[in-house]
Image 1 (tube, rainbow over the protein chains, first blue to last red):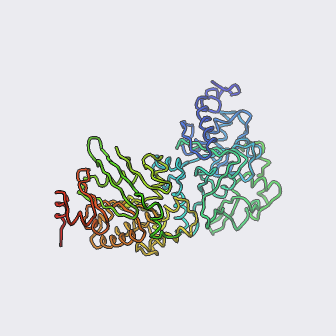
Image 2 (cartoon, rainbow over the protein chains, first blue to last red):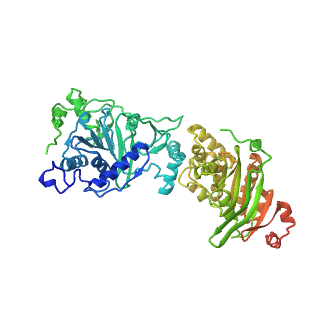
Image 3 (cartoon, each protein chain N blue to C red):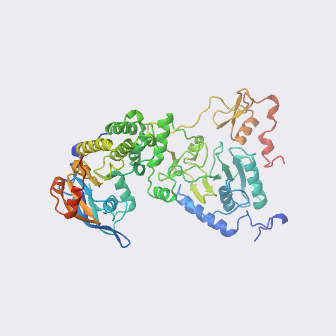
Amino acid sequence: MSFAGSTSSEVDYNYAYLDEQTKRMIRRALLKAIAIPGYQVPFGSREMPLARGWGTGGIQITAAIIGPTDTLKVIDQGADDTTNAVSIRRFFERTAQVATTEVTSDATIIQTRHRIPEEPLTARHILVYQVPQPEPLRKLEPSERETRNMHAWAEYGLMHVRLYESIARFGQVTTTYDYPVHVNGRHVMAPSPIPKFDNPKMHNADALQLFGAGREKRIYAIPPHTTVKSLDFDDHPFTVQTWDKPCGLCGATDSYLDEVIIDDAGGNLFVCSDSHHCETRRASGHRGTMLGEAVGAKLAGDTAQGGRST
Amino acid sequence: MTIAQPASSFDADDTAPLLRATDVSRFYGDRVGCAGVTFDLWPGEVLGVVGESGSGKSTLLRCLAGLDPPTGGRIVFEVPAGPVDIYSLSEQDRRRLMRTAWGIVHQNPRDGLRMDITAGGNVGERLMDRGDRHYGRIRAAASDWLGRVEIDPARIDDRPRDFSGGMQQRLQIARVLVSEPRLVFMDEPTGGLDVSVQAKLLDLLRVLVRDLGLAAVIVTHDLAVARLLTDRLMVMKDGAVIESGLTDQVLDDPQAAYTQLLTSAVLTV
């Protein structure tokens, strides 16, 4: 079975690569996951033309929900132009004939590795996370049988033991990414390795959030307008990272910043991890202290056509 | 966190047994683990179970503690709402009961402790299990309990694997008692410890059990432990109870031939 719109070189593939039965199976798992927010639904993860660990869970979800009228954005650690993001985007351009974009507001499906875009997501967005380890209790309890029981019976005391240990040793919770959350007052869930900076964005979000772990064969979801609470203690409330400096390129003070070492004399630069956000701000005239005179050229305008420079 | 007052264990209906075992049997295929064990345990009472290796002591304890369903018989536990058959409960409710109403001290501290979690985390886990979410109070309770089992509270952030065997065992006891259970099961609590450490631990256990008004079931092959800690004694052989009664009575005037053999086999130095 081939998609009518596919070009001659792609007719060997079914639309969006996966066969229809597989997509049905994944959609069924997705429906169950949405019905039970935070619950990990097992699914028959397929081999993909990409190594496990490169986002095969997210790709399979995207393949199951994408249609020709969708617009896809793929980000990796916030950036649209890294290897992983570029190859996944190209994969869907070729197998699903969808338009791709780097503009967050233009996208209908955003597949992400380790970030939530800075721009607030709306009901038109579906956010698909690539998840390496879906089980938040795994580091504490190696037995899958036992962790399933703990989820079934909502025995989550052990999760707080982990936070306790961190505070006892370091004076604060040192988990800064994949920070466990309590979804809909029921399931404790791993939000995938997003920085804890992004955790508050998951709470009562307008967008549908889907999580796929290809190697671990699990799908879970947060439906729109669902409570997502980061675990904490009453006397050690959850906080997000802050930075002393604004973004060196666009001057943003409210975005998640990556540190870039720029010389071997201890010089560094803090820069937005969300590349589209940073470029948009620069295009509208914001300038950071580290942005030289000549650097303003590569701006959001270049990328709005959805192309890469290849 | 407040510490259980001695009286608190008796708040509930003092006229009903805390634990009532009726004809409890556990078979492993054709082999008998334990058979036809019947007894009542009253609030604040310490029951000893003695017998040689393989006599079914630990099997019985596992059944009583909710770890292993018996093949036959009933185990009824008195909760504030009334008596419940613990194996008629859902596994979820039974686990909740295991975490709150009673505790288990294992022979090997490695079975009862998380070796890579600090002492404070080990003691605090049961508090967090039941929903305590205030770090300062959890830590204060852990520190208090370390002191009560004679571990220097300054070692609250050390891990159990850096502790001596006796300290590990005391830490395990603190971890169990912090949630103020009404009943504690102990499987050979002094096994594997040298004699002087044993003596210290026994002394501590005696004080704690008396102070807190705990009921306890202590499985041991050591008659000295039984003499020191228990009010009542059951002697087991080949899975069956062959003699029971007040501890002093059983040990001083044993009736069954096997019990006579057991008491005369104790070494005196």
